[in-house]
Length: 91
Image (cartoon, rainbow, N blue to C red; front, top):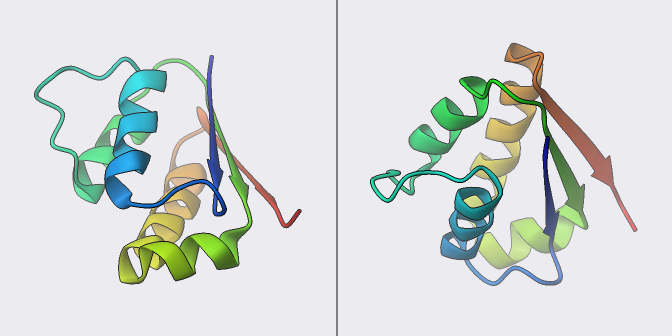
């Protein structure tokens, strides 16, 4: 099982987000490092993946449009795949 924590106070860029997912999911070198590729990797995962989202407002502020798109993607992946769990926390 993979667990990824996205903390709005720690992440500075969308590249850091892709780095976290690539490490946690052991993605190949050719992983596309874009939101479409991330969605495909999450929804195709054969093992459970838990994403813990902390301080969503700060994440949106730091990542701008991409932050909002990332959060929408995570919610959609959790709806579509039984192996993806999104835990949203405001602390």
